Length: 59
Picture 1 (cartoon, helix red, strand yellow):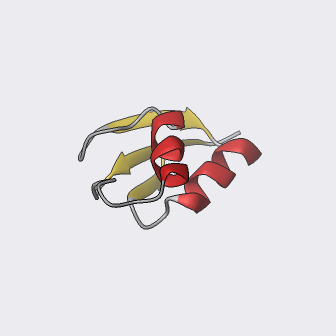
Picture 2 (picture 1 turned 135 degrees about the vertical axis):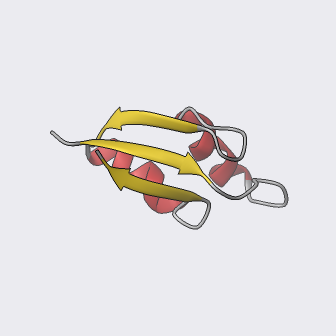
Picture 3 (picture 1 turned 90 degrees about the vertical axis):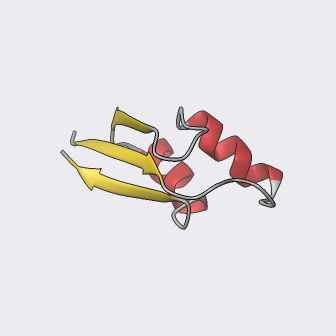
């Protein structure tokens, strides 16, 4: 499968707890922190919950 780079671009302050949990599950937590992960269905679901807080790039 493809690998993606996910970068947090907005804060989780004043966001629902479900969005904070999704950011943590992606391995993020601070603005401008990036992770590289294998793209799969579980990852797609987490990204869709916080798509307004992150930037996703295919590597």
